[in-house]
Image (cartoon, rainbow, N blue to C red):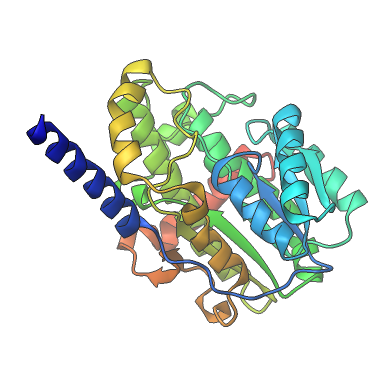
Length: 317
């Protein structure tokens, strides 16, 4: 019995130590956002909701760009109660539908006169295809955000200095862009197994990196800057549609080694708010610090081609 208690105490101590060690650095910006408007995609849960709470607490008008109205309205109620800010608004956005992205942008531009920060936060690791016949992971994680950003760029420029913050992932290091696969399958890879979905997710996060790299080049000389980031290993609902076996196997790892959404949102907030990082437009951040990236994440030719392919898939060229 004593041995069992000792082992249990040791495990609890290890758990506490790991959680303390894995707490990520916090965004220390004191920036206030009264009179500013921000959009956060996928903001009804996880990192997105935590980001929206923080920005709301700073006085921003927060546009909750979400697919599920019911879940978004519950989140909005929570945010208003927690922050005392009633300027929190739902606008329907399904990143898996290019028509929905266009409708969102049209509604936003007609009803809102400012856009100071765009946070491309939403992400998933689901199989299947979007309403436009594009691979779901590629369509939501990259293509929908690509179109959304492009459609809102003029408003961002009008309201500058402004920022575009895209939540990528360290998983981008496992990614690659197969343009032949994009051409033939409108997807980054083939297959629907859990491993194939992880590969597609990694490829999509590399797309986020290359998109930010190319966007920064196109924004040179403007008052809009952009950043990509790794939020850390965070407990979110991103894998809620994965197989039961995958969820069972990953549960202990998530419990012990992944941090909460509040910790995971800190680098997003840093990129959105931190003063003085404008010269680092196009860069990749983690733990509230700029990071070096592999050559494939800043390949000018691949980034340019991905932009052009994305425009074609969005019907813009």
